[in-house]
Image 1 (tube, rainbow, N blue to C red):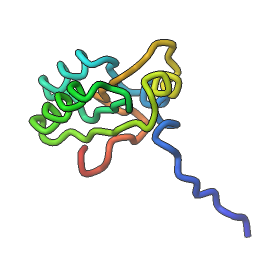
Image 2 (image 1 turned 90 degrees about the horizontal axis):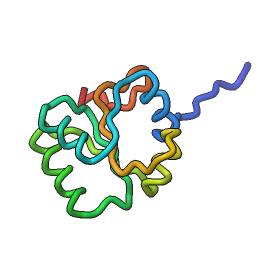
Image 3 (image 1 turned 45 degrees about the vertical axis):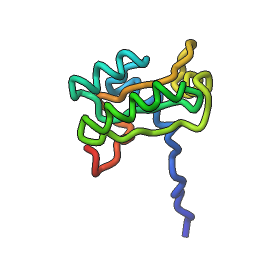
Length: 108
């Protein structure tokens, strides 16, 4: 009997698929706009985002029916590398995750 591969795919591995097949916005201002317009389904925040901006994102996410925040365990350069981008990304807003299944079931 063959052994089944039950490896859980990491969040960082799903990000490029979400960018290719879904709708993702990069940057703090775009994220705030999407939260204010209630288009955002999830927010990914890098570890070295300034605390004031992080609190603002938490506040707007709370106002927008508790949009889930994912705190990325790396810097903005690491987040850009996992998104296959060549510029720093401090915050990204997921409007539609496409085929990646990033958004938790209770939040969707």
